[in-house]
Amino acid sequence: MKFNVAVIKGDGIGPEIVDEAIKVLEAVGKKYGHEFAYTEALAGGCSIETHGIPLTQETIDICKSSDAILLGAVGGPKWDNLPGYLRAEKAILGLRSELGLFANLRPALMFDSLSDACPLKPELVEGGLDVLIVRELTGGVYFGERGRKFTEDMGEMAYDVMPYTEKEIERIGRVAFEMAMKRNKKVTSVDKSNVLETSRLWRSVMHNIKDDYPEVEYEDLFVDNTAMQLVINPKQFDVIVTENMFGDILSDEASMITGSIGMLPSASFGEGTRGLYEPVHGSAPDIAGKGIANPLATILSVAMMLKYSFGLLEEAVAVEDAVKAVLEDGWRTADIAKKGEKALSTQEMGAKVIEKLQ
Ligand code: IPM
Ligand code: MN
View 1 (tube, rainbow, N blue to C red):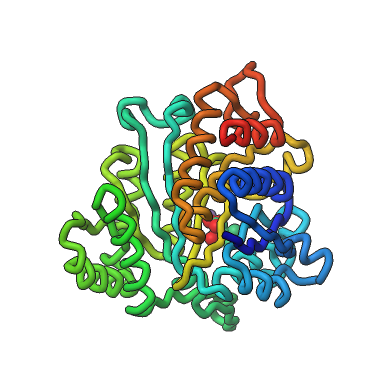
View 2 (cartoon, helix red, strand yellow; view 1 turned 90 degrees about the horizontal axis):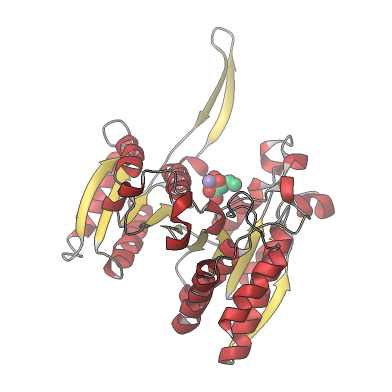
């Protein structure tokens, strides 16, 4: 089979880690007889440098005509002081909304061989941790009306509105239940319905759809309580579904407790099978160009691409198993190595994964 992949390497360590992920994809193609065609596109800081804006119509068009998008990371200190609409992050937000990528899957998975890196007491995560955060990605306060007003008596005022429609809530809710059906059949819906009207609508929509999934155990949890539960009893969770900003915050928390933020992939998709795949970590400008970044999150993002956009399950599992095997053999990049342990370069780590794959 042949697949078109849009490649956005982005800024910072983006190009280095994407290069390794593409090599892995090539190795998969060779082994299983698939062909991948790549079209590179700019977004973020590098797009600001070339075109003056973080996201061009050309890049959007390239993404729209591809079967999947692989993204490294965007942004860096060089572009941090530009006005909001010119920030590199705007590229990510623009891609999400232009491509209708309303569902964001962020698995927080603890790798057995890295369990030492978990900051929680060992007994809290015994037997491993596997939580899937399903984050709504194109609605809420990220995309609501925002602005400023000045009045003589109050001075400057700023506002960001958090709107949600029934339809937006229902479609992300269904993604969460479908995912739970393939996992441990539990959904925790996170809101702040003791305060927010959007959360009250969120909760009532979730209650309506849960009856379509009688096999799934369902619970509601306030977001503040969820933040707490994640550190005192993370194993109670299977699938967590929540709105855009809560999901942003909780997914960082969840990924950190796995001890492997440099290891976690993510997938974002809309109505069809086209998805955008990227590591959860950022562009790490402090180590860019040094060849020491961990490419595993991007490589695991490729595994998600194989599974969700291309329906190539066996191939996806092969990539995941190769990563696990490399870790079990004790190979580490600097971010996950213990003090004094020898660390592989970005390229060496990519090569180890390919070795296992073959
Ligand atoms: C993320 C990031 C983005 C977000 C930023 C870069 C706009 O933090 O993907 O979690 O807030 O969604
Ligand atoms: Mn974030």
